[in-house]
Length: 404
Image 1 (cartoon, rainbow, N blue to C red):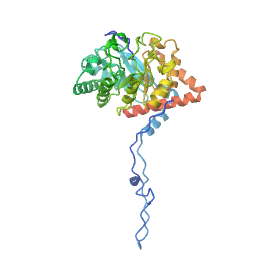
Image 2: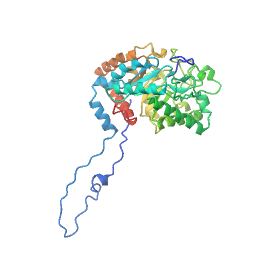
Image 3: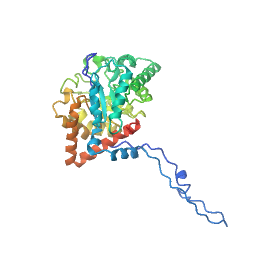
Image 4: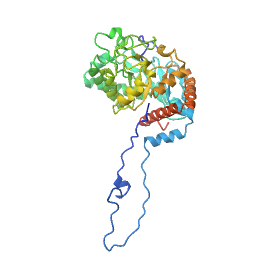
């Protein structure tokens, strides 16, 4: 998230293509495919008739998604598009949310709880979920933004210091961070920050630079460090999140605490934008978080989170990202409060988003109601929601969460 933080404070899509293994025609059809057909019997040999049990391809991701969808009513399908906040000082509140079948839960705030205690909570949530397994998310960057700080978690330096580490040391840090999160039952980190804050401007960049959340001051430096973090998390079974597309490195105000946050510099061809596309196509399949700022040089008509130009045209089409697009906070962030909660969810999904993040979990029913109401009168929007649900579930399949 853009992060309203003083240190220590709480705080047109398409489904992803199936990745089933390729099948060998000669093995499946016993050599009968292609122009050769089956071998003819030898001259004078008696013709024989053989029968073989039919073979079929093993279930692939799309098949598994279809099976899950068949067991969910429409409301339950739409609920998979929501990640709801649970305060780290009241994690028991997540039990009821897990039972409602949301797509994920976000541990929000700060905690000194040990990893084992958090793992027990996450396991309980997973057991309570009536559908696919949950995304259990946290903000674990380092420095001022490290939600989990208790036993089992190393104190992480800020991103500026991480980016200055030799490659081997940064890789070890990333793997250690992933291992500690995985041990705590966390499978989604809302990190790392991929925003580029130009040299000499950090102090005036309230959401990122002021808290040393950037990995460097050039796209090249940021891309190298962020790729290492994404890979390290992935090796531990934790999905990373690249934030905050198309970049918060050139803004001055924080979308968590201000309205009208605008980046009048960044355009669609900006290197900061390009690096998001390069990082997002990683084999580690990270998510991409979209900011709630406005980018007049890309789309002057809408905030990025509600912009079909930013999400659909730029991120999905031009940068060829077909994975999960998650919003920045659409619950408590000041930048979005002028819109009714349901309209926030509808606009984000209509723009091409996948997962709605709301730190305020009380808004989830209203948001789901709004999505269902809109799709009941708008077939095109309903098809867009279908695509988002499939994209969300394909990501869960890749993370081993479809079995619940």
